[in-house]
Length: 332
Image (tube, rainbow, N blue to C red):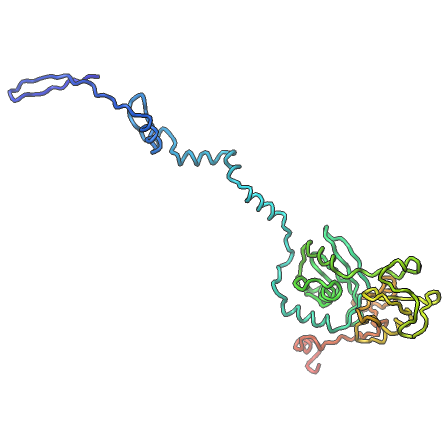
C-alpha cells in the first residue's frame, strides 16, 4: 500500500508527500532452486525468504529420515555383507583351541607311541553327531585293552586320558594306525571336514578271517593259498590248517598256529609281518577271542599281556624322572 511521509522545511512549513509502494523483487527459477539448495524456503505469497529449518527439513535431515524407512534399510545391506554373514554362520566351530604347532607334551607322547609296543585288536567306523568317527581297540604297553575314539574330540578310555590329558594311545592311533596329516595329529579337536579327510586316506580296516575259501579268494590283496609257511616251512594246506594273512600290505599266508607262536616270541616288540615287515593287523574274530580270554585288572581293564608275551610292569624310563621319584621313592 502507498505510504504518506511528512517533511518540515527550513521555514517551518509541513509538507506531506505520498510514497508509492515498493516494488516486490521477483525471483527467477534459477535463483529459487539455488536458494532451496542452500536451505532456504521461498514464500511466494509474501515475497520473503525464510530459513528452511522452521518450515522444511534440510537436505541432511531429510536424508537421515529417509534412511530410517524399511525400504532404505534393505538397500543399505550389500550382497557382499550378506554373503559374509551367511558364511560365518555356516562355518563349523572347533571345540578346542587350535594348536599352531605341536607342544612339548605331544612330542613326549609321540616318542612313547613310536618306541613302546602296542597292538591294534580291531577298528570299526561309526557316526557321532553327524560326523564320521572310528573306534580303535589298542593293547597298551602293559597289556591293558583301551578303546580310542577318533571323533570331534578324540578320547581314550585309559587313565591318562580320563584325567584330561592327551594320551600316547590317541597319538599312536593318529600317527601309526590312521596315518593322519602331521598338523592334525596334535590337535585336541577336529572338524568334520578333517575327519572325512583322515578316514578317506587311512589304511583300510581289516576284515575277519573268512572261513569259506571261495569267498576269501575274491579279495584281491590276498595271495594264493599254496606254497609253504614261512615259519615252519611246511605246506600251507588250507584244508587241514587255519591260515592268517597279511592284510596290511603283502597279502602272504601263514599257519595261524605258527604265527601265534612267533608273535608271542616278540616280547617287547611290535608284531610285524614275517614277509614285508609291516605292522600286523589283527583279525576282528581273533581280537574278540583274545579279549574274551583276558583277565580283568583291579582298575576294570581287560589285560591280555600273557597272550602277547608282554610284561605287566610299566616301563617308566621315558617318563619325567622327578615325577617318577615322587611316585615311587627316591631310590627309583
